[in-house]
Image (cartoon, rainbow, N blue to C red; front, side, top):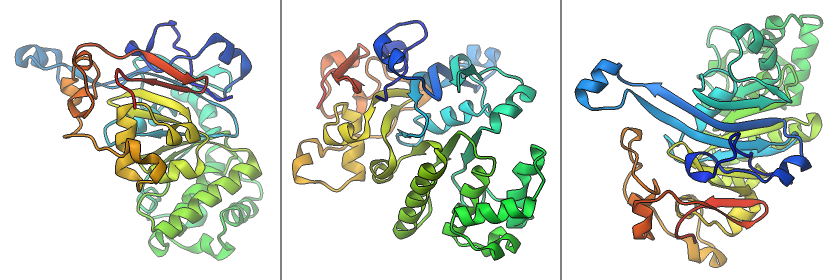
Length: 349
């Protein structure tokens, strides 16, 4: 079974991500384990902060924990500013973490030097959000796909490797001679996927993999990713706000709000019975109402608060239509409606 990771200090939900029982930890060996990760970004010098009364940094990710099993797809969902992309970049070492730990394939990779990370990055690839902008306009598709092999010194039979990559993503060999501006959005996304899979990584982080694509092309990309997962056993960590995409491909999902995971579990369970009021708000905004889902068709009030001024108590309470007085003062504790579903809400759906 797939479950969220336990916090390294054993503490409860309010100061970190959703924990995990010791029995659950014994039942599986995750490919990726994120434990109580904290990420802060400086915004003012200490002197300026003291003079203005503003904080010197913002906490973009506030103690997040989860695990990801090999061969599965895990989705991090939430509105812009929820911290999901920042967390993904931290996993690859592109963003430093201030607290917590990231373990990959049984090895702690957080805090490694650039030289040490080089070997890890061979096994963790990233598909970036912009399908055209993420490809260098100066390079042909052949040069783009050759780059990972050259970086890691695997240049033998380079043309054959590139031809196989193009075939893997459903493109004919003549695409190797094209440049990004000569590609459609769907073709550019296929090239991005091919580049990510060049070295057969164990983990691929896909940041909004269907952004900017027509609905029909979105379906093609999701089916392609699923086929490649079956073929190569690739593990996907998907970053998205599109819940229709999550429902189609993810085994498990975590809902993030202001840098915290507020609900986590099997995707089917959360779609059938969402509990946190932020989750129900996301569902109401992203999905068409279904008769059996009428009880959670609601919307959130207002805008997402600034990280400079986090609300006290439950951080979602200023936007929640169902808040109670306790929501204004106390962070909710974790609840478990089932062994594979966890959330933290004072007044759940």
